[in-house]
Amino acid sequence: MLFGVLAVRADWSLLEVVAISLLGFSGSGQFALLPLAESGAGFFTMLLVTASINSRYLPIAYTSAARLPSAAGKRACVAHMLGDEAYATEHERDSGACVWWIRVTIFTTWVLAGLLGALLGRVIPSAWLGADINLGYPASVVLMYLSASQLRARLWNKEQRRPAVLAAAALSAGLALLLIQLFGPVYFWIPSILLATVILGRAWP
Image (cartoon, rainbow, N blue to C red; front, side, top):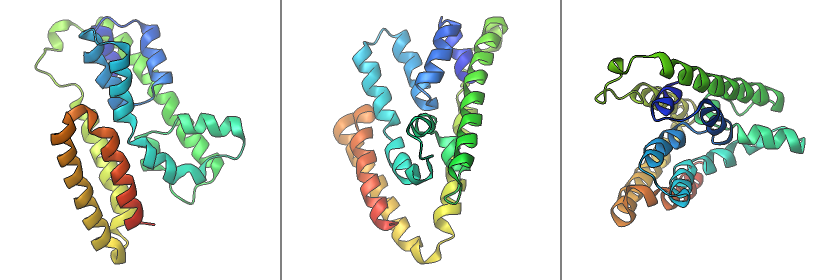
């Protein structure tokens, strides 16, 4: 909904808001596109930045692939609807049908909420949404809470794995900081995600 409000205020049409929600189902990627589009960035730049941010889905998709339905068409649709919220909600024991309904529900709600936000953005007075108000902050807090809950449920309760997981997480964070210094805050994403996937995968086989 916040994305829809901000997109309309940046002169996006309702069709553009719905299209990016359907095709680029990624909160952080969508929010990253807004300032790039407003600054007149080229298509390749926007594609590279969005792909870099969304590269975090590589390990998520890898670890959740076994839960996907077996039918090819349905499998592709469910894979496209993978998101942070779905990954935080699903469990390893969930069936393909259960995963299907979880992701369809979240995906549909996501698109409709974006459209609702765009409609609200057209009627909310400009004075209510000053430049000093960070509308994305509440969404970030929710995602941080979901991530912490998922880590606690999947990793922290496994006492025998805690030292290895903590060491791997610390190493991944250290490498990410190093890569930020080497490649900058935009281009560090892809190598950082790939390294973290390998390191954490070895710590939690």
